[in-house]
View 1 (cartoon, rainbow, N blue to C red):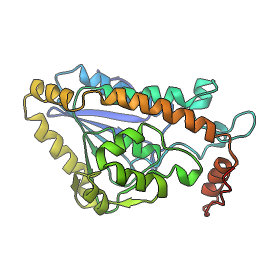
View 2 (view 1 turned 45 degrees about the vertical axis):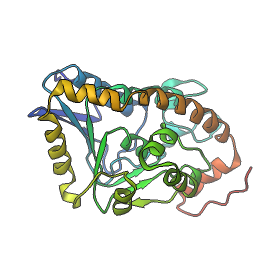
View 3 (view 1 turned 135 degrees about the vertical axis):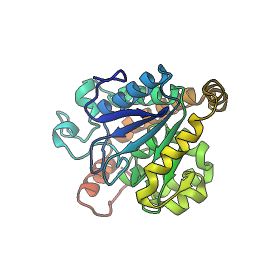
View 4 (view 1 turned 30 degrees about the horizontal axis):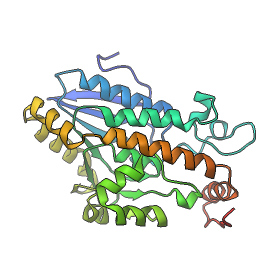
Length: 274
């Protein structure tokens, strides 16, 4: 066990004042409560060490994070057989996603600057995770999508706050209402990606940016970041409260059941508005 913690689904390394937190659930790195908790624990541990001045959040595999784990029926079906978040089994309560969102808010409360290395798809809640970093290094092959309405659902993970603040209200509305996938070049134009490089250079470029930040005054950077992101975690917490209420209502609809079924069958959903 390292001084930064022992984890099953992530790897944490520090080199020359830059920490690398790598998600290890390839190929698509689907998330659940456990994974978000581990990332939050790692970020908080890194906040407490002078060995780290900046963090790179990256992932092993084809996708950065392709969303919540909707592939394991054991974890996604309750007693009534209705699809639900994997966090349900862990939390054992009526509103299990609330626990996931509590962990998500922790990510936004940490102190040190984070650079995201987005080498592939960041979909749904995976897009929410990709919005945690201060900066995102991406590639033409990257894909960003808030595909919730395609599932008969509502955006979550604080995206109604974070995506809107990053790309502007109109661009966020376009992504939410259409569920379209945004490619790397368009993400750069929107401001969702800050740097665009060839796919095999994404992590190296992210580390280079993180190292540039780490060369600056750690006290100055942390203080500046605190002012620049002042209130962000509270805004995310307020957003997730609203998102959760709507998600739990929509979770009971026929359209949500149809959206999840259509996704698993790889077809266009037939929504009825019920």
